[in-house]
Amino acid sequence: MLRLVPTPIGNLDDISKRSLDALLEAELIFCEDTRVTKKLINLLAEKYELDFSNKEFKSFHSHNEADVLKTISKDTFSKNVVYCSDAGMPCISDPGATLVDWCIKNSIPYEVIPGANALLTAFAMSGFSNTEFTFFGFLDHKGVNRASKLEEVLNSSRVSILYESPHRLLKLLEELNKKEPSRTIFLVKEISKFYQRTYKNSAKNLYEELKDSDIKGEWVVVIEPKEKPGYNLELNDILPLDIAPKIKAKLIAKLTGASVKEIYQDLLGKIQN
Image (cartoon, rainbow, N blue to C red):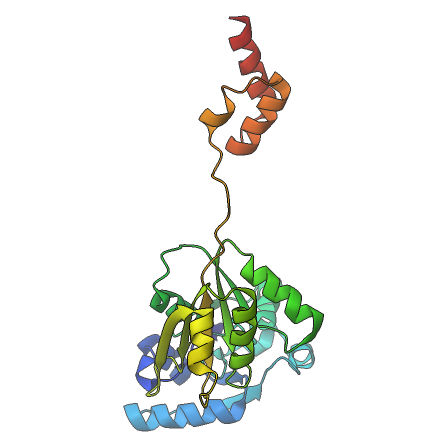
């Protein structure tokens, strides 16, 4: 069996009992970076007085996952197998998805243990009341792909969430300031760590506040959605329209998901009566 284990994103106390149990029971641990995982396990062993000896560690990351998948078989999962990324939830802007897909295709049982995640934590911290969001991960460093993705972010009707490094945060704020200076942005750095800080202001004000700062740490950027002009079309807006029944039926079907044919027949019946 495979268990995907989320690891703390800053505060060691965020490890759950289920995650600790999974790591204790694991015989094979796939890791994004074996050095990081071994360091984490040593800290957990010391903090909770646990014995994590007799574990096999195997590297599994974006650069070697295709090669590693060629070396595993169903027998690999006859033992207790764990996958954990360096910090946070596996598969969320981290490796692990191809391993899960391999298990699905080969009927290997697996489970994902809930736990620490910077994306959802930042969304909850942002104070934006929207229930829909789009996660974009890290933008490309430069070029056409970055520019087009940033346009998609700024034109989204949903909250947009990005990850950003300290080396490029100011560049992003400068771009946001040039394109949408009044757009409200929420920033959080070093979630759950000692130096956690949050900021919420317009793109212009945030750029002015941070442009001369020594920016450090990992950041999550939450961007207010774009207000769309106009209003939502409702059924009562369509029914009184003096248009051909076929066109009206198509509009109502588009709005309600009902059958065009049935709506058309119903409209004809009302006209005849």
